[in-house]
Image 1 (tube, rainbow, N blue to C red):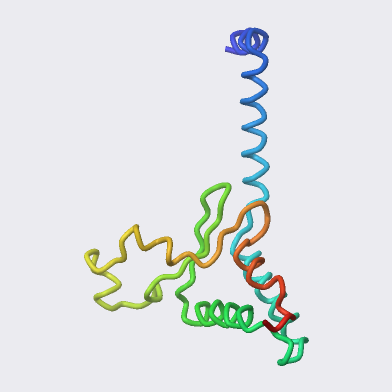
Image 2 (cartoon, one colour):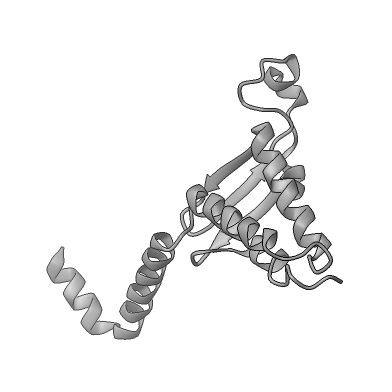
Length: 142
């Protein structure tokens, strides 16, 4: 097998270079994929920075987004999904520990088409992008 691999690399070096570059890129993206702990730490860090800014200067949109995420954590409806090179933070209707009929009935579960509207943030290349976009100018009142 290794001899065949060697001959394939020698016969088609461009193809081998593309495959090895793709595999190396995928491995690097998987290693730099942020997790839920990174998201929670980033929320705490930005919240602490926003608290230090006076109320007249705070960006209302940034503050509302941070309050919404904190409320979702308090209610237990925010969840983490890892897809290898991408991570998602999404919300559900009810807490996992809730034992209502709505939470157990498969006919009342949300459809896959509504999944896009439930995504709170997307993690890629070590950064949570929606959080970064919404809180970049947290100290500029618009």
